[in-house]
Image 1 (tube, rainbow, N blue to C red):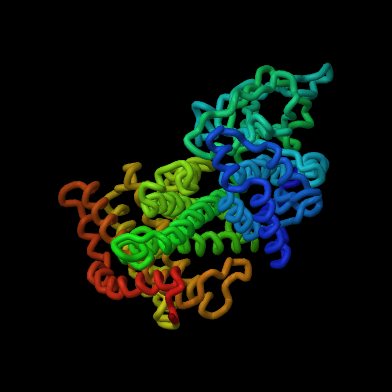
Image 2: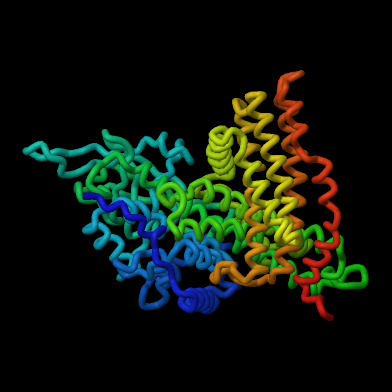
Length: 567
């Protein structure tokens, strides 16, 4: 009987002191073993510090991967909230090393969701007790993000009695994190019944890895192609008891794994922003520090802090729901896609702005922001590209729009209006306008049958992510004011600062949905289409009026960031 319990997603969670201790220990370990000078040298040499990765995985040294492993198999039984916080902390130190740890977690996921109890004891126990390293072998050279198009095959081999005793695997995997250093690899291959996961050990005959890829960034992460040439594995290497369930097992954890990559974007983006803030205090230009120049702070710092914290709010909301088992099978796949999209796009933009904030210095190798900008670029590519996220979001929310007869975002607007009535300072009223604009744009697309255009569908995914992000951010600001926000959030900003950020974000989102949404509808609809008239439902005048106070709020956020309040 296959055990399909969602071990990672259903983790009981760490208590707050244990989580803080793990994050502190992680920071101390990396600071001691990978100081900035060594990180830059390894980046220049394009070399993965395998010794450090193995020490991090050793339960007697640090055992960071134990956060992701159920307690029954030697782990700490961390929940989604714990995993996001640990991933963010790792990314702030080095995203390449963070990816190496994440790859073991990712490689173990098919085991957690689909393996038998005996298999879990063997494979998860090896991670929990010995700190072995895993790789996740799904992506192929021609298939990319489309797992259904893979060509790696697993041919059953039958004994004299007709029963399957072994499988012979042939194929190639591409862009595999930990590919050259993993002790075990979970390999997705097509059996006669469909895609199926197998666990293959490093020393299996016919199983080999190419030299590590020469990458743009993430150079401390070992990334290599895997070759499977007549690799014969026993039937016990098949994850679970029945072949053909590989895609279902992969999809069960997309919400969770994409949340972890969102944390990578968030952590790297914030580290770059913090470095830019520190630099601007000391850098004198035009007779004063850059930190006192509105043209600097309001372009290169404040907007990125707002977008990063909006992404954090959505991530925490998603993590909390995963930990409480909400959503279909607790997977929260669309929410995970929104979290990843918001956080990784914001992280990339923040890293880019940090280079600009450093001027010419930011463009040189000795400055860490240059490396971090190259590293964070991968977060909009791996574990599902931003375009795949847009498609995932749009397809799911389009169906919800249709099933609700166009009420989904109108109902969200009503919810935000009620929140605004209770707490008018958190930007919920403007988030409501954004939701009403989103509803009008979706209705126009329905009337004009515009989602037949893939480009329009993808653009809807982008706008929907922003609309839902604004609503969740407003709720997070309200919770911060009430003192009811999740105890595991970092707590960097108080309710007043969160409220100002939520107001700024809601204004930006509402204006973007109104202008871009109308533009895409008008640009895609046939001349004279009734879709154009439907755009009258966008509350454009109210959205313009809501922009009042934007500069004042940005000034306040800058004062918070630079500690200027009360001076």
